Image 1 (cartoon, rainbow, N blue to C red):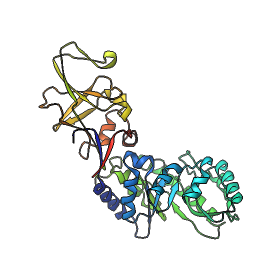
Image 2 (cartoon, rainbow, N blue to C red):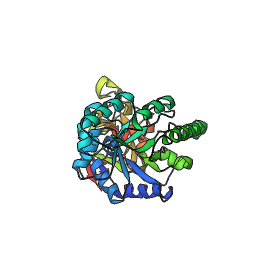
Image 3 (cartoon, rainbow, N blue to C red):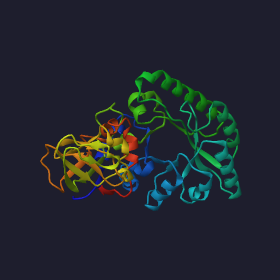
Image 4 (tube, rainbow, N blue to C red):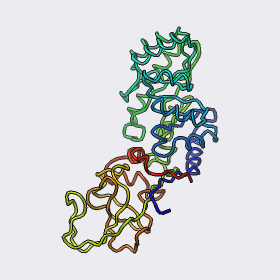
Length: 361
């Protein structure tokens, strides 16, 4: 294929789903996180595949992501993790389930439901157990629940929280303190409710490292796409980013390559031009230390990465224009690519531009 493509391997997705599911108790529900276009892949195709595997829930960040899935025919329940006050109408229209995470959102949503005479609308209640990002802390949880417990407008589907450091076993003491705090807060809140909502807290690394926080449901995002911060080698990367050698430039000793003359040739060099740049999500940070694979060999990125292209050193590589370039795949994966510039696979995958064609494998 003589162009830049991002291949999305649905068989790898199914494999990862089965691996993660095998770690769970039979009755534990599975929530798949498909926000950010399915971690930079194709959220609709990912969701359709997972729905065919009988996934229990989806999670997205914003209501617009949930609307997109509904319009594509997805019928599985969808939790919106960070709904905004401006999205009430589409939340109701597309039967999305919002997270109640702040008094600002809660108060406005209650007023909206009352004004529309809506009863028992499914919602989820976010508890801040130590990540300190969004959600109600212990004291706030009591006040927020007082607004909900006798309200006919809302049906609480779950109480949930988010772990901060399950991928770092040196932080196990903190993780266990989060789990215990969540148990304490949720137990107290449930005592005030007539119906018992589900509990969920575990993320991908939590599933593998802390089975004690499995509760009624788990959430997996990055694990479904093949990554778990090097803690598990059973998972298979779903993404493969490929491009081509658009041009080969013969440079002489002393020639500069790219903007700001960031690279000076110390010898005669063969330079490959790759049609990907920072507009596609390959940031300028990769101008140093990163490499790609050309005909099975590592080729160092040189010079500053441009908006639409970057350059590589092709010396000692048997290559012609039009040959394939692998930015990352199952062997040389996105985590390795990310580590070369001190970032993480999440950032690499979710930064990939929409102008890169997605091809479903």
